[in-house]
Image (tube, rainbow, N blue to C red):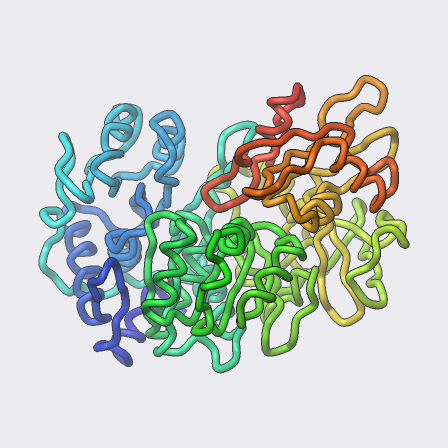
Length: 526
């Protein structure tokens, strides 16, 4: 295997006339797209940039992201994706730590780059969507050319995303050409017939995030399919795009599916063109899945992964069947197991999902660890963090996910919760996800999250944060009684707060550290 971008070159050769990108009514063919990546690679080379030089992409999901991403790889460089919601303080660390020499940014974001530029190695700033002082417009930056693909080894860095941490600085994740190619190819084969040239993929998951980058963008482009980027999430716009273009593949986070079913006209949506609805980023509440599948023809297939694993490690494949409540089986080429703190393997249960009221969870759960060609090279410049992240055992290099779960004898894995989210109240361990699943079943609850907050007597106590449905009028006492009726007494929320919305990341994860901080707790590490 060589440079990751050779997979796109192969798609260009086989499907040059196919539409690679469909964006706001404008189509770009594979041949045209390849020419654009060549112009970006030439622009880098003429400015003396190439192998191992970092290029930061400070963009939402727009076509120039795809052009700069694959153009950088074509020139042998390394992509540093940055969240376009970040401000100067946040990108300053990413640019300084990575040593990026080029930043491609929305014109409106260039001032944030300027604020920190003197503290970094940035030599060139390229603007998208307008002129910006100190930046070269994207079209002017490009240079005509059709350069050869720079040879890279499997173990050479290709992309360096940064993990979002709430304590300390975000860590750069070294993902290699081999990591990303193996994972995109694995993701391509998880549905019947694989991803096909006639597939049309909704590109709403952020491209700066590994899920949107690998499972959505790269898996589509490697197979000659059409990728439809959306710069921001809007449920009505997404459904209109699915209907108008007869899209066939949608990947999203649970909050997106929840938004769809909570639209006032949800029953009128036509989702019948979709042959795959994938979900990841965090566990989807079973009730959200059930309601979606009652309304529409497609089924939702849950998967699991992390930035450090490129990302996908498990998936409920339509080929092998699914088990609702599970993250699925380990994808081909990847190994995983559940281990104790001393790294002894935890035996599987007979069949899952288990009734958590009928088992002692601590007897069947442990930390999920993974090994395979998709697992990162390491955290950039952080040897101590790498030592903590991996365990060498049985000739394998196992990555610690930090997620607590179990597996059954049929090979399905189940995530109980993040290890860091577990609430210890009065000596009992409570996993918030179990309480959240119950809350989602209440007809007046549109969204919910559960977190532990300080309590003098119990150490921690459970608090529920709830977004009511538009017509919902459930009270705090009714929520408490509902939970008491359906859960062990120590698991019910002793405090309930109704909110307009939950704080979420751009990838849809609830920022529980913000909920804890607002209630006198410590941030912890998400």
